[in-house]
Length: 366
Image (cartoon, rainbow, N blue to C red; front, side, top):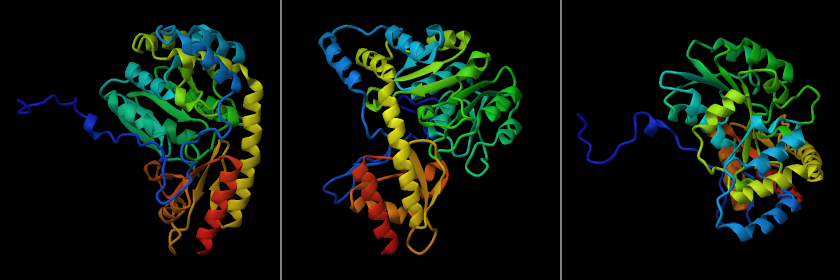
């Protein structure tokens, strides 16, 4: 019999390492550039800001619990059936809802060694067992994933592109993965950075969801749409998955301002294309300049770069992070992702991009 004199969480909860967001501050800096959270340097669509302004006068009303206006806008933009779309308080919520819906104690969820930390958190929170597989040259390895599948596998989480590496696997490999999974296992394609990818062999997951019964694609408005503050995510899934998840989600999980802003933002295709063009220009520039400093950068199709530092000589990632902090540049340590000697850099405003390279040059030459 328990001798506790206070409520205790269920077994396993206190074994979960809480997710820690990117830092926002730097010591001894008069101006801080936050380049740690993959936020858009262009901000939101002006149409989204206008939509929020118009909605501000009705804050006393509950939002539409089905987010119909937002679902219809997403469906219109991507040519989908709105009945197969479910909106959420950020795509993180969807990952949790999927785990809660499909994983029970004793079940397993598979993800790769450098995958999003939330996969582990939500698997453990649901009482499941995380199964971590090795990557191949910082990319998901389909053969390794399939080799890890057992009769207990209920979900395979695949970030494509992946964070923090920025790597992706082509659509043929994603299809091979799905074909090799048991029909009872759900393949969750986390496509948070899909809009940034301009590769002929990439597909976000829409086609595979449309032709399968065990594939789900999740997306977000936090990245290319520049609306991280509003927490808007969405899922495209088979009808039976949408029906199941709808039974466990909160009734008003997307607020009214988010619904209006999201519907306006996703229709502003010109703003998205500006963000893509900006990212391609500055990502290429950063890779070239960092290479001149002798730093290896993992090839990325996202709006961020994984920078690898020397292991000795006082030029480690920890040393660089401390030095950059004194100059006002906040990058992301990625030790929990399996990269003890790397920093993740968000492609930021022009001044920040040029400034962080100059600071790194100073650091490497000091």
